[in-house]
Length: 397
Image (cartoon, rainbow, N blue to C red; front, side, top):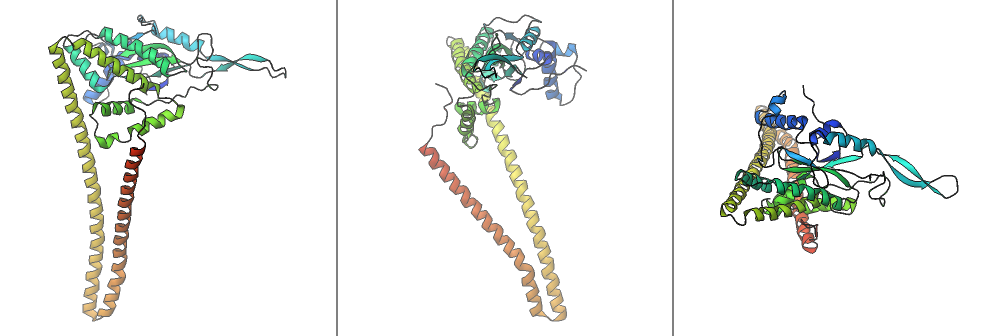
């Protein structure tokens, strides 16, 4: 059975050799992981991955291949160089030095080693779903995207250090053959001489909030005009809440904005002199719009079916109660006819039916109250947004 790298979140520590190899798109472990995911997705079953299966030459981008791992200056790690480099960094960055009181009453300071559990962190920056489709279409049309993506990887590393004041980027991995085209900046908060990159932070503080790939994807869909309004209403609020945790916009969001800008310009530059390539981009836009529309129509259909099932359950429960009441009424009338005690039968009917009627009325009152409260909250929300519509803009200034 092949080894499998653990942990696939968009942000987290990079602790082991397995994680280093998974981050290197040309390593055998990374090839196996990606090929296994693709096959399981296609066949929905467990597969024992072999080196031969992992080496099948199936590239989503012919001009990029599997991708690369780049140093901050843009040069590429050679085969077999990346994993030892990261192991050395982890060994050297196990602590940082901080100034502290000597504790002898002299008031003098001394350097003290502060241990760090996870000195290297890895984050994820993706291109948008629309841009991923456009780039794949341009690649099939014969465009060489390798220089564009390399420049983009360098931009990701540079802008990450600007957006996260605690980070020093060690490498940027480009993954072109797994899912959407994306980048993994690996960074540390410790300098080469074992000091904090940002000494103004509290001791050990590196908690800059992340927006996350899901929220960023929805913000992109809203900006592109593909996200239905009912899904887009609270997105600015979510981003604002994450920003308030650290007092700054999340670095993955900021860098994603720079990636979008850079790709818009790169695509314009590639296609400005070719009507054929402009047509390729228009076709990709149309296909993506149809894909998103069908996706949300399917979600609406699923939600509608679930609501219908809930209503059917409520009707069944109501009919069950009604059947029980009907049986009681029928039994009471038959007894009254047999015993000629109609006044007693009427009293018994009232006693039996009144709780049922009261319960229905109480439920109707609660429903009316809930609808009124929903209407009031919606009105307050509209008035509040009209007064203060100053959530973080999609593009950082």
